[in-house]
Length: 290
Image (cartoon, rainbow, N blue to C red; front, side, top):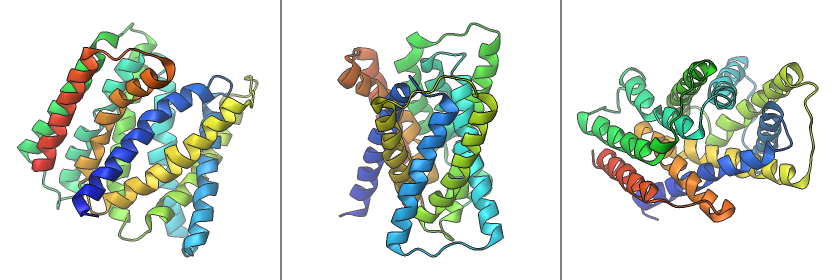
């Protein structure tokens, strides 16, 4: 398959998977507290990737410095980022959350100037990112709510989350020269799952837990597809693809999540969504042509 077509095919697959995870999270959290849900998600992802790594006969990483990197990397991309999103979304609307998290490409562009000098950040790239961000605002402008109080801290938390994700994206791109994409995810997922189980026992003890079939299916989907498969594809492609281009997936997933809601929950598709998606794809096209 042509390299360009393969790149776009994987981007489409990642967008479809990650946009569907919001629905899966919503289903899982009906009966399971958020930190416990995240712990199971990452543990399942670790088991799946560990078995896959064994099948690929990937070497076991024994160096302490490598495991220290995996711990830090896992904290940045999984524990820190996901914790901020889960906590912050308690106090602000999902529409505002989508817009705030969609600033990730701006973070990636700024950090790339220093950390990835080989990736030139041009005015055309910044223009494309800005156009894509405008598309997100068009889609969610009617859902913007700010009530003050804890909402400010919720906004601050979710604004910081994509910064961590952006930093991890660049770290992961640099680390791909040393580690297989499966290895780069397997060990951090293990350490992350332990962290979330600890957070559950500290912060969620006494909260009701019910392991029904919808919760189990949700965790399996989130663990295998939403985490293990998705992040391996993401970091595999990141080795040869611009970090800025890959970060633009954060523009695509929110509107696609609305389409999943239309397909599964019979939610409405609006003209706002269609116009916003056209603007988003225009922004991505500008970055791609750069």
